[in-house]
Amino acid sequence: MVCIYCDGNTGVINSRPQKRQNHVWRRRQCLDCRSIFTSVEQLDLSSSIIIQDSTGHIKPFIKEKLFLDIYECCRHRKTAVNDATALTDTILSLLPAYIINATLKREDLVRAGSEVLKRFDRVAQVHYLAYHPLH
Image (cartoon, rainbow, N blue to C red; front, side):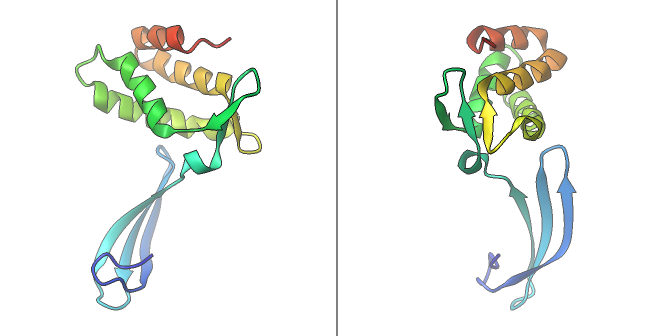
């Protein structure tokens, strides 16, 4: 990675995995100007995972679409944006268990979303399943 201040090369001086969000937090130092800054690395699921529905059609996984679906289910809450962000991160942390050969079945995605919503807000889960039925 290059320095955000001088475009020089950087080295990692501290690194910590973030289990809940499947991110890696890194403290970096520029080898030229000696500046220190933080970076966060995360998987780009849209370029590495495809969603397959029950008819066999495939489409790319889009994290933002999942967020919007969850947000729509949580709109009745005062903290809908923050709730949807945290719920989306929780769902994303569960997805690797369902991915086979870079393919995620739509039913598995809906099932993971439904389970997370069920533990958080039953009304949101019912709303989610109304628009995303399992079958």
